[in-house]
Each structure stands twice: as C-alpha cells, then as structure tokens.
Image (cartoon, rainbow, N blue to C red; front, side):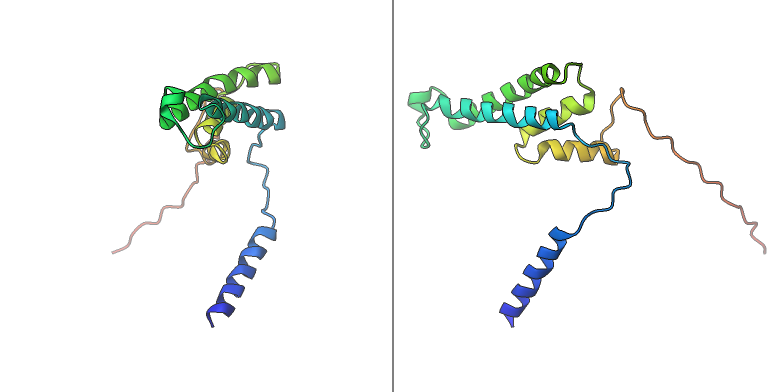
Length: 148
C-alpha cells in the first residue's frame, strides 16, 4: 500500500512540473543579460571563496587566515558590491532599483535569491521609486438601508 501511494505521489508531482502556468502579462521578467551577470559574478565570488583556502575542500583557518564563515561573509559582501557595477557595464545604462536588488539577492541566496526578490516586487511586497505604481481601483458598492 505504501509503495502504491509513493508511486501515486511521484506521478502527481511529475504532472505538477509538466503543467504550464497562465501568463496574464502583469509580471516583469528579468533581462537575460542581467541573469548572466548574476551567474558570472556569483561564480567569481565562489572561486574567490575557494581561493582563500588555496583550493582545498577541507577548510584550514591557519592556512587561510580567516574562518570559513568569515570567507563566506567577505565573498558575499564582495559579490553584492560588485554585481551592480558589472550589471551597469553589461546593460550600458544605470540599473533600476529592481535590477540592482535582484543582483544583490542573487548574491545573498545563491540559486533562488534573485527570483525571490523579483517575485516580491511582482507581488507588491517590495516597491521602487523609479517604477510606476499600480493604481488601486476603487469599487463602488451599493449601500443598502437597514430596515427595522
């Protein structure tokens, strides 16, 4: 019984990944050049992290002069500082707040950080002064008089 249930759940999960989401056009997509910048600067900061320890997997604080978490913090801050600079050079224009925040989010949470920041902008959790804010539609409701 457990095996049949596991197969059913796995098939259901497979169908969930096959389906396509509806696109209403309200979401803003990230420029592919910006995504490439995030991947490139992220890879460079990962390389810098391993270069701190002379390219060894097992961390040796005596060799590196800094702990593993210290090196992680240094490379994360370096990535967050460098990625908007590289993004501006790649895009040939100043970045919007959204684009800069996506790049910094990609440095803080490596795989999904930029996507999370973009979705936060799309859902209205974050907003930027350089973007047009959606106008709230006021709904007129008919008022009913209560009778006694």
